[in-house]
Length: 460
Image 1 (cartoon, rainbow, N blue to C red):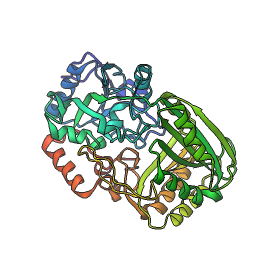
Image 2 (image 1 turned 135 degrees about the horizontal axis):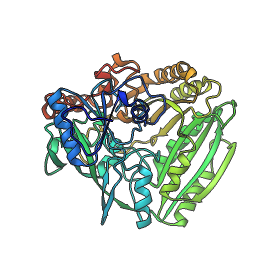
Image 3 (image 1 turned 90 degrees about the vertical axis):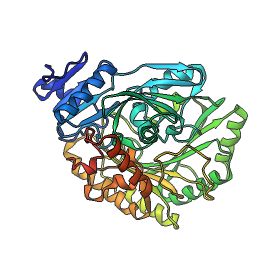
């Protein structure tokens, strides 16, 4: 574990010569199907001074850098061929100050909720407990609660920029870098080490419930959910997860999950009553409304996305004038799931049938317009011998939906497969993409940081 000449750090440095230790840190990611890309060095900085030293070393030696907050990435964006992988996954400090908090890059969603929920505070954390705040915020962050994208609650970012300067980016200083921090994803041209975020009072009666419907009823359920969302109240988060029942090869079913962010027990019960009457079809199963917590919601979601799997995924923003045709394509894809695909699924987040203008928010890179749904196709398996089979199902299923896609979510889009499509450029409105590319060049003129995977020719 000897550091390369000229790189003097308090933290640890691993090279390929370190064998199992190097490989353990290279593969410290979610999911487990890590591509054959090998950084020259893996750096685990001890403090900000180490980060500064690493950036300056990279600039002096011509090494590119990739940054890992926790390694939760469908395309393993932090694992590149050559260069330096700077891993901050062990940075875990949280400091709550009133209705805000400073969180280190490696703090996960569950780490944060473990601290703030005891104080009656919440945050729009991601749906997976192991997602680190760094990548989550930099990707924009679509999560739990009714507080909007997580990046809307980002107040400041402590960074080391491409010049090796330790700076703060906010709406008052280093504004261009701050704008990029609110949704540009792994094209961010700096190392974000700490984030200051706004926290919110937790609603008084966070609750959850579920109906399970036959796949034959998918279209009517989708239409019904859109009508419910159009008529309010704005305390409901309704998602459809289409998957096979656990540990069976039975036909996929539609799991309609309701998260209710009510202010009182009475309001929560009234919302559930509405979701239990005038149903579009008879449920196969119902899990009645029960009080929960933000931590409880994340724990229940883990049931759908267990760790230890190999995954490939694609999330699209959809506008389709014929929602029935969209759902027919989705159900056809669900029926084509490979045998044993117990954890593979298609996630459908319906939008209200009557679109309403989004509440005003800050200027961020999040810019893809859509009206019908957000749809994610996720292949999940364990046996590496079946990689091609599940890759094929996921990408073919996604291709049948892409004709209705207005764009992709940068945090959950496969950029390595089909690189010629340059999907990263389709994760943003065209003027926003142009602005991102110009700022990357202005803030990192020497190209010290790896850019988007599909612009770097990354291997699968």
